[in-house]
Each structure stands twice: as C-alpha cells, then as structure tokens.
Length: 143
Image 1 (cartoon, helix red, strand yellow):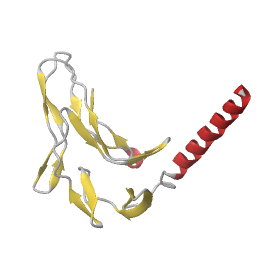
Image 2: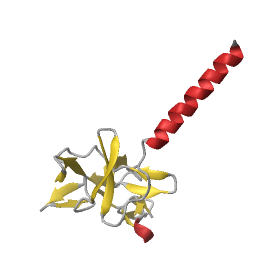
Image 3: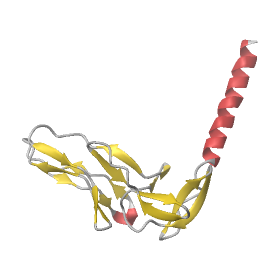
Image 4: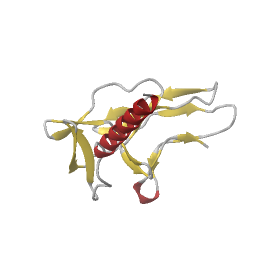
C-alpha cells in the first residue's frame, strides 16, 4: 500500500511539473515583442512603449496607475537562463541610515525609476536598474 501511494504521488508531481512547463511562454520573443498571459495562455504582443509598469488592457498597453509598494523598484519582464520572468515589483534593501527611498513615478508619460537619495555611511553609490549586454535586465544595486 505504501508503494502504491508513493507511485501515485510521483505521477501527480510529474503531471504538475509538465503542466507548469506548458504554462510558460515557448521561448524568447522576437525584437520589439513581449509575451503576456491572457486567460491562461501566452500571446505575443508589441512591447510596451517604455520600461515602466504598464498593464495590458483592451488589447493595448496603458500606464499602470497603481502606486508602487514602498522601497520597491519595477523590474521589467525579461528572459534569464531559467526562463521568462514577468515584470514585477522588487523590494530594494536599505544600505542603512543616511539615505531615503524616492519612489518610482510617471512624469510626462515616462517612467522614472525609484532610487535611493543621500549617501550611506558605507560610501556606496546607488546604480539604478538598467538593460545590460544582450538586453538582460540588471536590477538596481549598491556599488
């Protein structure tokens, strides 16, 4: 009986993992295109007009009016060696006293990344998130 339960659990785990892999986009999009999930399916659409938090609504990109979470920066959707990472908010740890977080915001239709202002006692400097070689997103960090 124990062996039967183990086999059933094993099969269920394999089924879940295979469904998970089917629920991801099939591969990197062509230039100027991105994957979005609509109704449980991935579709290929024109990329948003900038790096900021956009929402796909009524078959077009609109500026996401939701205020960002405290101390968070917007990480645009991107591909890694592990696969597709959808756009999301990520908390940026404080380096300590002497600095304060300036939230990301929209200005004249352009997204201004959140950033730390001031100088930490460690002397480190904030490097905002940006696209690196090959279009890979490099999150904001202290240097």
